Length: 282
Ligand SMILES: NC(=O)c1ccc[n+]([C@@H]2O[C@H](COP(=O)([O-])OP(=O)(O)OC[C@H]3O[C@@H](n4cnc5c(N)ncnc54)[C@H](O)[C@@H]3O)[C@@H](O)[C@H]2O)c1
Image (cartoon, rainbow, N blue to C red; front, side, top):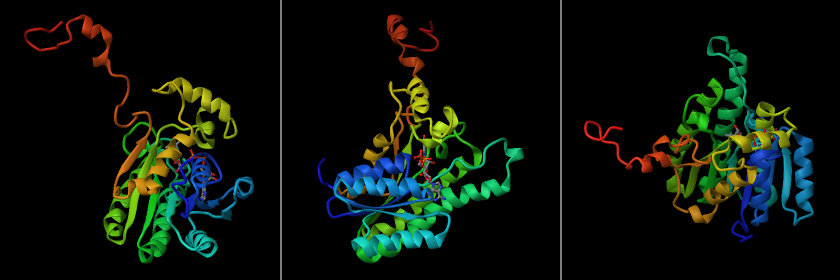
């Protein structure tokens, strides 16, 4: 480890599991003090206790990110306990409403928006309250390939994850003059409770999720939370000192490269390597 987060204080929402927990561990290993916010109190407390044995400086605050008072208290805890706030990772999320658009429950949609978009907005608002006067900070929010393309996520989830990108870019334009950066991370399919509930035997079947995602991976193995955490660490650290208003995919090229390239197949080289309509069309 490089100690590049030494002296920094981070808040991680959805930090009890998956990508959030992986990021808590990495930021802490790099020297940060971390406040974990999550609905799942037992697991959040357990992670904080585990890291207390590895140097401490980690506290858990039970938080529902869709409740503004909870998010305000989460941010205030960072300031009260550790004196400042350098990193706000708005990461808590749910899949939320699923199914055909003509049968979508608006109540389920409201909850999806409340957690995945309103929750991010709350995080940005209360982080900015501290970071603006401080004159520095990094806000990172978790979107999804579903926020960039159709066909890979539920409808409402896709809409709000696109909204996270719009919100982040807009806030980036305001906060840069205050020394505060605002960026988005886009994880590909990551082994977590969320994907285990979709591709394996249930939220606790992480081994099943890993096996299924290994098989469908473009790069030979499934993404783990730690792979995404390293992207978050970059955006959180001074290495990204002038990086703001970006979307960083950590997705094995899912959004940028798409699927396997038919035009790069070996057989094309054997046939001369050129397609030119009219003269050499084989
Ligand atoms: N796993 C993937 O393949 C994937 C891909 C793209 C984006 N994402 C996004 O990454 C983020 C993390 O997902 P994950 O895969 O680690 O899932 P996960 O289910 O393992 O972790 C999500 C965490 O958020 C917490 N949470 C849920 N609702 C909350 C609320 N209202 N308030 C506070 N905490 C709440 C959960 O308790 C859990 O600890 C989410 O925003 C998700 O949409 C995940």
